[in-house]
Length: 380
Image 1: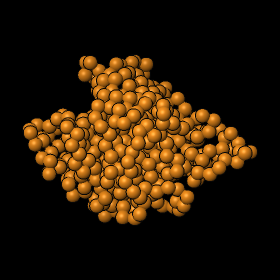
Image 2: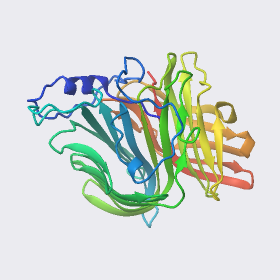
Image 3: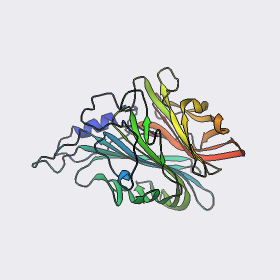
Image 4: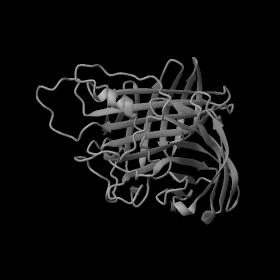
């Protein structure tokens, strides 16, 4: 999904700290704290204006000439006994200023890039959702990204591995005082260039787009640790990769994003960009990838979404539509999507709801189920 979630207060504070201040972590904020790209001058940064032929491993790495970039992993896991867990591990890079030569007398703390990482575990049986954040600058080896071998990190949370062509094998590692994640992921389907051959428009203006590819199915194996108890798990994960400089148009207030692994082997991604009038932007879109690899691009009019139930956060008071009816009439898909837990709100420097979901319904050949992730952003 195209995520423009950068914590304005936290990033602004860190950027203003000066060269002599050590990196900071920030306590959860109750406000949304979103900075929507395109709301200020972006002179000096590259912009997404043309389709791209992605090249790997290079494009698994960083693109610092663009203002914003992320590596976004989500997935559903289970033990051999069927205990379910969801996970999210995401890394965001944000450029404070365009790339420029580094002064010879620059402090070792000087950095033009800020990094933020989110780590969340959904423990369905335990009825708990754990979400944590790390935020630092790209200095003194505290955070960064390299392509070959692949290494993306914020302190000791990391992605490591290698990826050439359509083959990707990575390891994910993150932990905090209550939980830990250690997974090996191997791609089982080709990478998918989203939008028009990788150029995913989010508005009518030139450059209001991201460069966007997904690895929609990664076989996952490893361990989840909750309160000191470790569980061996397997499952399926999803990777979204995007980078851009400016994307949102005025009047876009948020989005609803679905990434689903369907039981017939197909994979569905769709995001609805919401407008101030509560409608869907014509630049909403996604992709349906059949089990045989056939790709069908989905435009705004190809998918019907209807909220079924909402959940109100006791922590923030925000109401989120956490259950949906999703239909793709042209492909014969009708699904009712519901969360494993209603409370999967990340009230961090950026506030949004993102969590593990399951679905039941019908496809063109009969009954159809799904697991995946849903993200709800911009709700007040």
